Figure 1 (spheres, rainbow, N blue to C red):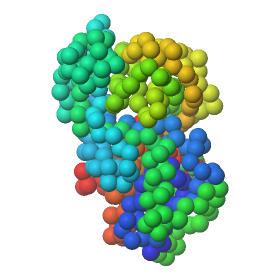
Figure 2 (figure 1 turned 30 degrees about the vertical axis):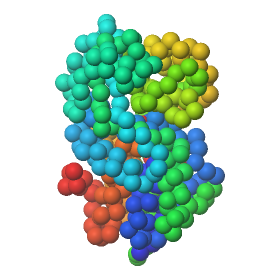
Figure 3 (figure 1 turned 90 degrees about the vertical axis):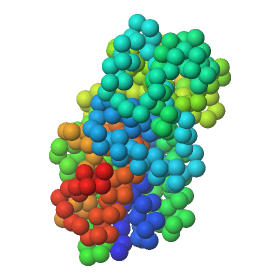
Length: 331
Ligand SMILES: Cc1cc2nc3c(=O)[nH]c(=O)nc-3n(C[C@H](O)[C@H](O)[C@H](O)COP(=O)(O)OP(=O)(O)OC[C@H]3O[C@@H](n4cnc5c(N)ncnc54)[C@H](O)[C@@H]3O)c2cc1C
């Protein structure tokens, strides 16, 4: 069997590695000349937060997300498994209670426990929720690590190469082109996300921190070298051309509200991209005559792509052609 994967975002790369691990000959075609800002994956926070995300998503997200964390830990070296933290300022403390009712697998922290976990936040928050089993990674280094893993397994990746091939005989084409597949997948919609990359010499955080604020909910994900990803807006729009002044203001306000030292941080990067999403915000594996589509990862590409890669590989290797792979069976 030979597999061609079109698109080297997180959906394409996880699928490529999963199939190559099972002994399949895999070629990935990516139209851009490398990993970069043409893809939604480039701008992700890299949070692997199955239980936090359960707050506004289906139960399955938590199950698939847990499986995906284990996959990432096996496949790439730099997954940080230090949990994630949720905090709220005193006037919004009730938000924490509401959040705790909609999620699982957390423990309550008081001010002393928060400062023990994140000394930079000492004396800033009275209560928080700690999701100790969650993880995070840097999406950019993770994509590169997957490319290296794929090549070590004998797979190939062709940058700067579009691919017009169609499935034929035992040659299957898997389309993982994200938002670019909207003309073929008519129910796909775009959800714009805006984010910032800051650098602060003063602050150290060890894990993603979410600030619960009814007006400006935001999160900060630490990366090596004093770098912080601040995200992210969720706007029903497929216009990823520019960040709005409001989004910039809100993201910076949220960062400074988490810690005033962010006011002195350097703004290294401003990013906007369109998340590909189906109406129920769940990804799909769609088996069509000429190709298989794996798409619709919405705000969960890093959290869910490994679990969907596993399901797709199971279906392909068992020859189970179906309109939509029944992912409930794999939960
Ligand atoms: C601001 C922001 C923050 C986010 N944070 C998180 C997070 O913390 N955790 C999480 O799990 N998810 C997060 N997400 C969601 C995640 O980024 C997406 O779900 C995921 O990146 C979608 O991946 P994809 O591979 O489907 O699409 P993409 O990453 O867009 O990849 C598609 C690739 O296909 C290529 N392509 C398109 N057409 C062709 C063609 N004809 N031939 C060859 N190549 C082609 C494109 O160039 C691109 O590289 C975030 C998203 C945003 C915008």
